[in-house]
Image (cartoon, rainbow over all chains, first blue to last red; front, side, top):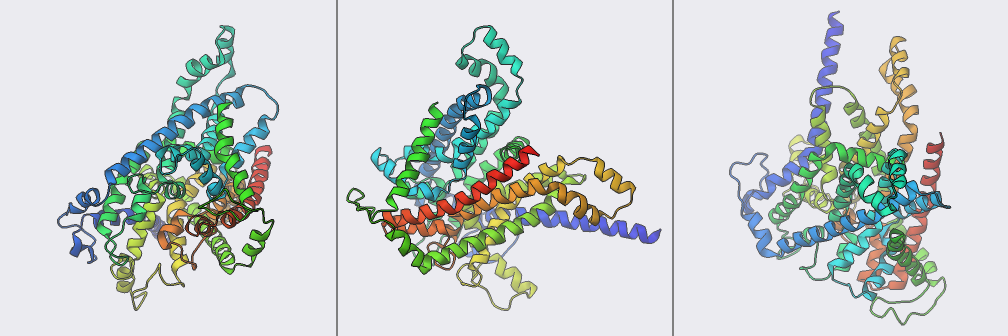
Length: 280
Length: 277
């Protein structure tokens, strides 16, 4: 009996250790970034796990030494416009695919899924030419436009999945009452799709906020850069003197709002992610 | 449908253009004056040892990091599947790496990997695991491994959440009868959980493989255009933008597209099989 009790205790301890290990593994790198961002130049180069007195100068320096405020506004503009346009387009498309019977519907859906698997680099040169032809090089609209390639397939796919689960009787009643398809989308589906729209919008926002390849290639001046490009290209006096304090401060600034968003909408994000992958 | 028009504009048209450029000697400065040169770009590409090393790096990166992610993700998913106080907190904690932008994770780890001031060298030296500080991202022996570790850290949460969703959909009856029969938990895992979870696992693995094969930002931020770690996407972008070889870079892009398309077709057939069963 005693042996069994001991084994149980051992099992419990091992489980707790496992939990601690998982939390440490996932949280430590970000914790370290925060600690490093609050260290002065000299303290930065000593490894200390606790912070004795926070040093805020790095956070000021990021905004002083490069147009980081402008970069944040750029990222916000690009992400929000991408989300709004792709949600509007995807909602109409999801209605058509989920509700209206037409030939080649499945083929269309698989084609959209196929586009979501596109490696971005495969369209890079064609996209470059398209953007030049439209005169959008080094313009934020180039990013909003090109980001459609990964936000649209994803939003269409998830919204179609949600649309299919809604009861058909609702819109049948609306059709009997003589509502137009647009009115049906607007008055019947919009209220019901609210949660789904928030989820997909949030995931599309994160994807657009984090995008790097297009943002790096289609912008030139530092005023036009989005946040990821700005952080990747922060440099010091020489390649061997990277201003790590500034880099960490910039990283914390752009990540904290994102983490808060994700934690607040935790459940929705998990359901959106799994709807996109598992149910598909 | 307006959605289709936009998709054709941003996906269809650029793809066709890219493939078309692949057969020309176009340059970035003057794309108009391009001559058709047939398969020359492709034959040259297949002889370039840097292309092959980038293919090899990408494959190693994708296979190693996806396998590690699957194992770790499965462990975390099984942990989250158990009932214990603070489960919500753990789920929140594992979402943090997922929420952090890739570029930011790359920079955070770059700092931890720093050869002189990095926390990793400090801890490993204290523990006696290494005798001298290691230049993790610069040394050819450890550079690719360092990048893989960051990718595993960043994408394991996604894997864990997908697998957790799969675990929660499994029928409970099998587990109850196994418990009544007194089957050992490890046996239950290999005989019941793993076979039942196989469809979810397959989808998740292929999904992640596709993602890993097109890796760009992580490799680019962590080691730039270094040939020891260069991935296929970094190679194509370097040819295209830095060297201005619109035609040659497009040929590389087209080849990457074909490789990934092959995997996509596999994915679609697996997804279809999963849907029918």
